[in-house]
Picture 1 (cartoon, one colour):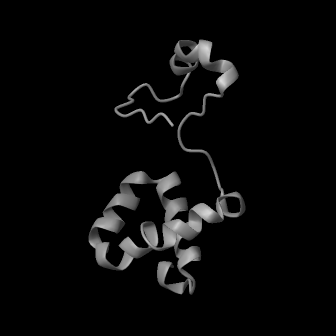
Picture 2 (tube, rainbow, N blue to C red):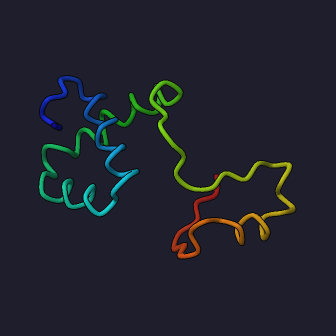
Length: 91
């Protein structure tokens, strides 16, 4: 199916969908086809994906905590679906 997509952006969206639904398959696929897929999941296609994020957004990954909820971080983290958190990125 991957090869049926003509544009790099469509390939990027397809791979992100796989990542969202079956992360193990996604990483195996990328590992087995790294030279072909790296330009799709990283530079240069990821730049275009960021610029078009509002148009290609499919589903959330992670947890967003808004500034007004900054005093409730402990509660929000305790209610998160995944308690096996290994990395937290704060921006």
